[in-house]
Amino acid sequence: EQDWTRASFPVNAGNKVFRWSYAKDGYVSSGADAAWLDYIVFPPVDTSVGIEEHLYSNAGMIVFPNPANGSALLNTGNAFSGFATLTLTDLAGREVRHLINLRPASDYKLDLRGLKAGVYLVRLQNEQTLQVKKLIVK
Image (tube, rainbow, N blue to C red):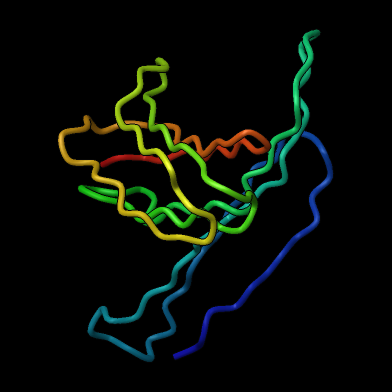
């Protein structure tokens, strides 16, 4: 068994397709072998469309597992100071969850029960910082 390995790959701007494959080596035949890809981070990009926008970072916030079923764990990271508000919205912008007074470097359980399967946006915001992550609910 190998420990987690951190890897990074420089990628030039433009449309890209990423593929990852896993080849079973036959060392374990019972189906107990596995490989995981986790915490994939793409740098923020400026997508200006003629109005003033800000470049936001999501480097500090982690939401897992993703996709999730029933609940997910949110780690707020250290990318902000003070308290923050979390909102979970569907892609139509409807707010489905709202938490206030979240602290930096803390873990919170997101209750996803009752949500339809689909894509949601997790927004962590205070006066200085906005972080957004996509969350898939199964």
